Length: 498
Image (tube, rainbow, N blue to C red; front, side, top):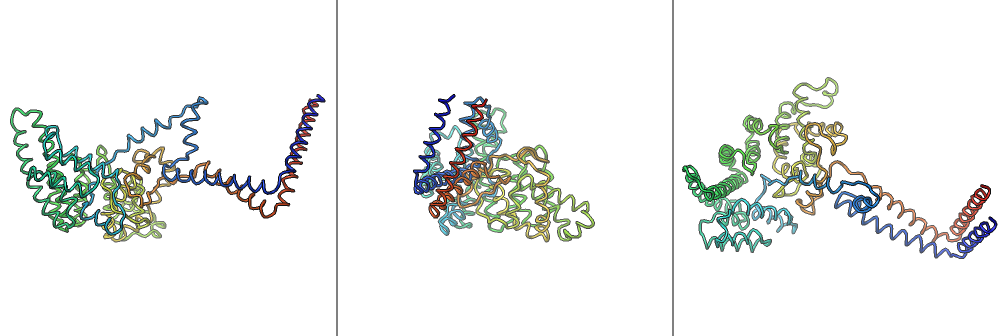
């Protein structure tokens, strides 16, 4: 027992002597280094959180360290499950690359399309415009090179070479119209030519389908010709819409919706937008009645168009002050519920419609319920909301009420499934880097960012105080050491008495 007390006493004397021999410069260096290191960790943590939405330390702890201690973590499985639920869709209202996207780049020197978005479009074109029977054909091989090429000039050159091999090759004409032409009138001219060729080829393969014996090769060819025909007709109608030839565009859209009701190109959304531009609201209602079905996939276009039509009936007379006194009428309640339903489906849209966030050019692909879909919808439909008097005012007064009914949107929803948590990261791959992607729900800062921020601030403050008041800080450290030594003695006496 005596030996133990002597050892503890000698250690205490050694610690006190070591602390008293340290100069204030040592403490300045120590606290300054700690502040610098914690600052670097804070910056990295903040960057990782802004890019991926999670704390790096927390992510590593959950995925790599926790299994060592027998903790069951299904984070990776959960993420992969959510990713599979988030399907990337083609934007039915995408613009023309040469006449619109490239002109934007020439004016701003900012790429409006990401490589991931363009790569998805390349995959779509190879899927829809090529079948197994086309492999080995010179024009097809050239177009495959064109779709895989990243530089627009090289893509156009390959398409022209394909036309030299086959003058009526529709996919090559479509690429030239999309990417080489810088004026919409030139795009219309080439698209009309491509559409006539595609229609002729489609009629031939359709007649072959009507025979009693249809070979698998004929079925594959007919499917390819159908895809090319629908795509060429839809893009021609979209070009006419951009040229303000809206009635002709509506005619083409109606024919496509009638002949191909389950087309993967979602032509009904083009039809809804064009009818809204013509202010043919009863026709819009009939289209919505057909497609706003519980068994069909929803979209921001469908949900917000339903809300717009219901808001149109009451928006011009709506007043929040009067409504708060007498309550909402049946029509007003229906409009508010439609807005809440739309906001639950895609909570990013109101910020663009109310001009709380700046718009960018819409991408060629979207994620439903994501910021990319909100940009694509608002780019065309903002004018329709502005045209109806009071519609934006009603939206402004009611849209935030949706979130009070959804305290945990990632876990449960009222009308739709819970909001997918991985949409933000996938939207960042589709939307251009200069666009600030909207985040929903608002994420709280992780504990480790707050901890490193506090550590960095405290150590930086200690370094400054030690540098400015070295004597006082040295006295403070000595007093703390004496206080600690006193506590150690009390603890030793208690242990020896036990």
